Length: 114
Ligand code: DGP
Image (cartoon, rainbow, N blue to C red; front, side, top):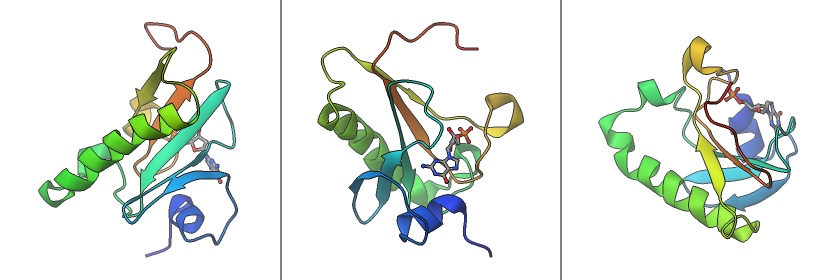
């Protein structure tokens, strides 16, 4: 299997502005930010999308969400808040088939989303 772009970022084969990493997840700034703060947090394991996560991914996914909140706090979003987004499939707007959670902040988010 070819590595996904996010696996290559996690293994430092391609550069990214990494803001957090551990054994299970890597968080880095999005190359096409849509908010003043736009970070992606992704599992090292190449789960394509949340719909394809397996029961064995349960702990890793919980870890990813806990770390998303920690990363948001670390970059100064705790006081004013932020949004976490996971796009799944074509209608969800997914463009990279490696599960990732967007951490968006630094401006007022709209609802409903576009
Ligand atoms: P999504 O549409 O939910 O699949 O989001 C994919 C995001 O990934 C999109 O906001 C742009 C970002 N992205 C794509 N390629 C790269 C890359 O090579 N580096 C970084 N830092 N972000 C990337």
